[in-house]
Each structure stands twice: as C-alpha cells, then as structure tokens.
Length: 297
Ligand SMILES: [Zn+2]
Image (cartoon, rainbow, N blue to C red; front, side, top):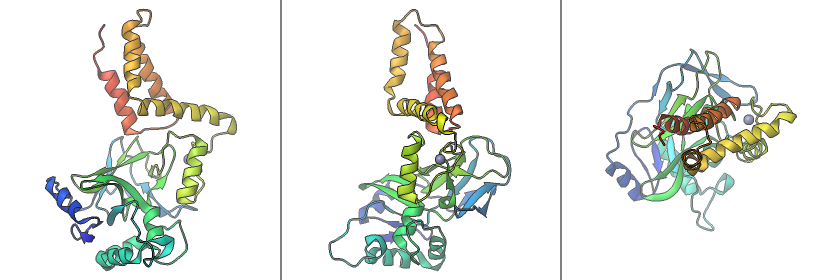
C-alpha cells in the first residue's frame, strides 16, 4: 500500500493512485525553492515560526516545497490489528517511517506535536502538521501533506500568507497574500477565516489545542459581533456565487439603481475584507473578476 514517489516525498496511497498521478503528465518539482526571504525562530507558546527577512510585495512566492509525505486524512483500520498512539495501525506507521529513511524521519519528528507528549508519536505529529492536498486521482478521499518547513508556519485568523497545493509540480506553495514587512511573522490559516470568532476558537482548540490570540481574536468584546457579521457577509460571497448574478440581475432590472451599483457592491466587499485584514486570494479573485466585467444595460 505504501511506496515512494521518489526520494523526496513518501506517498502513502493505494497502488493505482501513483499510476494515475503519473498518467496526468505531472512534472514534480525536483528541488525545494524559496526566495530565502524568511528565517525560522522560536515563538513563545507556539513552537517555531517563520519570519520575513525582507519586505515582500503581495503575491511574492515565498516557499515551494516538496512534502515529507502525503497520506489520506482518514486511514481505514482493520478491527483488532496492532495500533500505536491514537489508534493508528503500526503496520502503516512503521512502513512509512522505514521508507522515509533517516533524513526525512528526523525532519518529521522535529516537527511540533500538539496531540501528545509521547515520543515518536506518528499520528499526533502527522495530524498536527498536515496541510491540505485535496483528492488525489484514483482515490476519492481528502489527503494531507506534512512539510519540513511549511508545516511550521503558524496560524492567524487574518493571515498574511496563503498556502496552496500544486498537483502538477507535486509541491506546496506559500505566497504573500498581502505586503509583508521585514520582521513580520508569516501566517496562514488552519481553519475557515470566515467562521465566527467562537467557531474559529472552537476548531483550533479541538484540532490543534491552542487558543488563538491573533489580532482578529483579540478585538474588544463589543466589536466581535461586527467582526463576525463582516466575515459572515464574506462567507456568503464565497459560498454563493449566485450572489453575483443576483447583484447583476438587480442592476439590470431596476432602473433606479445607479450606474455604478455593481462597482459599489464589490467595493463594499473589498472594504469589508480590508476591515477584517483578510487577503484570501479566492475572495479577491471574485471581486476583481466582477469589477473587470464590462457592464452594459
Ligand atoms: Zn485568531
């Protein structure tokens, strides 16, 4: 069940997944890339983190990294089989660790484990550091990837960087979601930033065992309701693309609406994102796409 895609990334998958991935004509990145624009430092209460060593404009590609290994997020377990911490089958963890070799294994166990204090806790370390890969060809289930560098990036509910999985190059990529100043810590999100503060705190506590103290979570109590409402508005925009059609339809059918109605609607969305210090590329793509369209009636 387990085999190596190449020397750098261990892919734990069903046998025909590898063949289907390769059949796509992918061109795996052979070397990890970075602009050397960051350094790793201890962060009190949060293990280690990455910090910018130079000013980075928006969209700067900060890191391109091949994962240590990839696996399905949920592993089927045969009742009665030997398991390690958190009920993970030892025949899988032993096989993966052996395939990693000394170098990757050392990188893996150097990562933080928020799930236990058990030495060499494979499942705990994996779940603490997994970043999403999505569904791989040939096995319709979500997969996660553990990275030696990227997995150390800490969380913020108003992150300054964004992560994405590049299946063609079989690597993860971190880009500046907004301009990042020299000395600023790089942050990504571990949860949906459009959830309410309480929902975010609940998810982070349950999955990663920490209380978020980012700027968005530290706002005064009397402002939280407004922040939650703004994020809910943005969630509506993201999850209901038909909202765009509703705005367009209103503008084309109601002559009383001003000519710049659509522009004003999206500028309002953009303003809401800025008020929440959010820079999700998907949101900005929706807004810029809407503003780029040629509106006539
Ligand atoms: Zn937060």
